[in-house]
Each structure stands twice: as C-alpha cells, then as structure tokens.
Length: 296
Image (cartoon, rainbow, N blue to C red; front, side, top):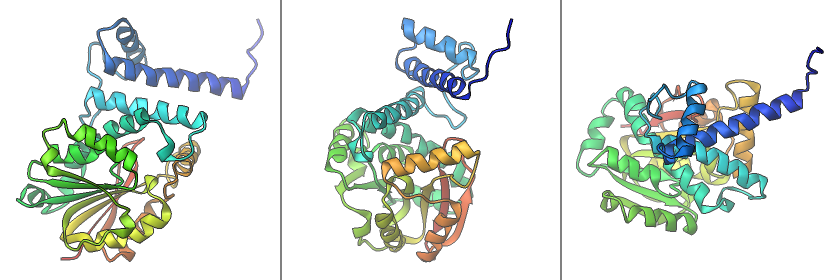
C-alpha cells in the first residue's frame, strides 16, 4: 500500500466542491425541510456540525432559516454569475440580487443586539416620532424594510443608482406591512443634499464605487441630525488569514466597490467631521463596521 501522493490543487478543489455542496444544503434545508432533498441536506449539515439533530437553521444573532438560506444562496449565485461572465454588481441576475437582499435583512436584528446597546441615546431616537434612516445602496430594499420592521417608529429612505434594482425593491415593498414607512428613490449618494434629516445612516463601502463614497460620506455627515449615527460597512482585507484577506479584495474588485479597511474607514468618517469614530467587532464572514456620530 503506497502513501497517497499529495496534490495541493486537487485536494483544494475537492474541499471547495464539498463546501459548495454544504452551502447548497443550507439552501435546500431552508427552502423545504420536509422534502427528500431537505432531509438529505439536514444530514449533511448535522454531519458538518452546523445544525444539531432536529435543530433549526439559525445563527447566534437570531437570523431566520430563510435569511441563512439566502446568505448561502447569495454566495453561490454570485460566484456562479462571475464565472459565467457577469461584469460588476449591476450585471448580476435578479435572483442573485434578491438573495443578497434577503441575506442583508439580518442586519437590523444584529444592529439591535450588537450595536444599539453601545450607542447611548440612539434607541430612544429610533423610537421617537419622526425618526428617520438613510440606507445607501439599498438594492432590493431588504435592509431598509427590515429596519422599518425592527423599529416601528422609523421611516427609512433607501437610495440606489439602479432603476432595475429599485423596480425589484418596489415589487417587494408593495407586499409588506412597512410599505408606508419606506421611501425608495433613484439617487447617487454623491448628490445627497439634505441637511439634518436622519438619525441613522447605513453605507456599505464594498458595494459603493470610490468616487461616490468619498463624495457621499461628507454629504451624509451633513444629512445627519446632531447626534445621529453613521454605520460604514467595510472589508476586512487587513484582518484574518491570507486567504480571507485575498477573498475580500477579490469580491470588492469584482463588484466595483471601495476597498476600505478599518483604518481607512475611520479616517474617512473623521475627515467628514464626524466624532466618536470607532470600529466594532463583527462575526466571521460579516463585513467590518466603523461607527461615528454627528457632533451635537
């Protein structure tokens, strides 16, 4: 019996293919747990230690099975679309954008659990009549609608440069109870002209082109009410393993966003006149987040 020859490429391909099927199992279990495919998928995820026997598909942040499944589907569909020649975020098929949108809906619950307790006065702001939020690069509007659902007094304005994704967002919004508190409009953040209008703003740097981001952040700063909070999501190419850092760079380049690390995000916020700038820890696989507020 001879020792197996080590082949780094074949070993890696086998492991990555296995990982792709594990992601597919998350999607299948979330889609229809009682089907033959769903039961087989549960066996895979139980064997992987992701789901306890008979347990629910969720995360420590309380994501729903549908949100977890959407996150798994988004990664698979994005990679497949890029392999098939999609050039940039706006070239992705509708189903990819919708999956990413549903996955992003986890942010509202994560914000309440992880960030809100460390933002003095913000919970009271978001519960007050007239509370407003700005969602930059709203896409299909899932993050905007999830924040509106999480905070019943909050009105959310979602802006995006793509009429195509806004059309998808409007279709989704028409079926939701929060439709009267979510405004969707076609606008580049670099043209934002509102003053003292928002209590909270969300900006995902990996999906916003550099010119728009660097012009837009100072405008968002002026659009915040005194004490209002800006959350700037950024990549982690300065954190983690060499592979994790390289993947962060690849995804950002492929989708045409801004390659920004924690230090760069903090500088951008401080240069825009915001105060109390800091980074907050986020789970593996989640973007980094820099937090700042408008001066009182």
